Every structure is written in structure tokens, then in C-alpha cells.
Length: 172
Figure 1 (cartoon, rainbow, N blue to C red):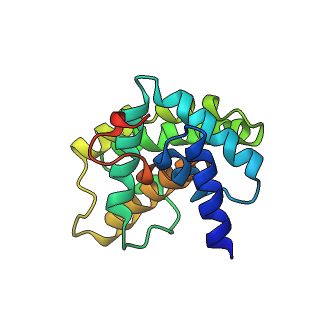
Figure 2 (cartoon, one colour; figure 1 turned 90 degrees about the vertical axis):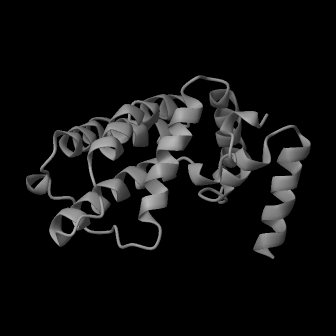
């Protein structure tokens, strides 16, 4: 029954002109409050028109892809960081996590997206300079935990891994 209702709501929003991938991204994390879900879709639709959207979605997909099928639920231990990029990503996460949660709680989804977009450079630098799946189990587990925190922050708003296909900007 839930799947039927979800499908009907998705089709309703798509018939009103919203992109199916954005609706799917929101409904994957928020289906309890349909008015709120629609508000999130509207915010994502507006944000998609901004230059920060595609790089933000790509950064999130990089995070999600490496976390697929691995345990990333441990607590981050900053004392195990051995690169400046790990420390920088963790610091940026710590700087914005409270603000992102507050903005989401207040229904300011565009504001939350702007804050999340501020992580993109740190995520890119992390992946450009840090090997996550190293042999050292403690380092690997800690790096996965850090990426798990980043993923969790993004997922408070939407599942960005469901946005777009090969070309993110060709929708809507």
C-alpha cells in the first residue's frame, strides 16, 4: 500500500512539472509529511538552476559510491587523521552540521543546500589526495566513518545519489 501511495505522489509531482529524479531523491528520505516533501522538491528544483548544484550532487555521489557495501557507522577519531585533507573535511563538517540541521528544521532547504555546497571543495580535495581503502584498518575505518558523517548530513535533505544520470544538468 505504501509503495502505491508513494508512486501516486511521485506521479502527481512529476505531472506538475517537477523532475522525477528530484522527487525520487526527496521521497527516499522524507515521506512522512507530504507538504514538507513538496517543499523540499521545490527547493531542490530552484537550487538545480544554480551553478553549485551539479558539483554538489557529484560530490555526494562520490561519497555514497565509496560507502556502498561497507561499514561506515563507527565514530570518527580525529587523532587518526594523517592528511590535511581529512582534517579539513572534518573541520568543515563540524562547522556546518549544526547550521544545516537548524535550516532543515526551520524548513529553509535552500539555505541548507547552500551550506552543503560549501563542503564540495573539501570533499573533492579529500578524494583527490586521500586513499580511503588503505590496508591500515584503523585509517580505513576512520575515513569511512568521516564519509559516513558527510553522507548522513546530505541525507537529512535528500538522497542525491538518485539525482540525474550521466548528465546531471540535463533534467528540468
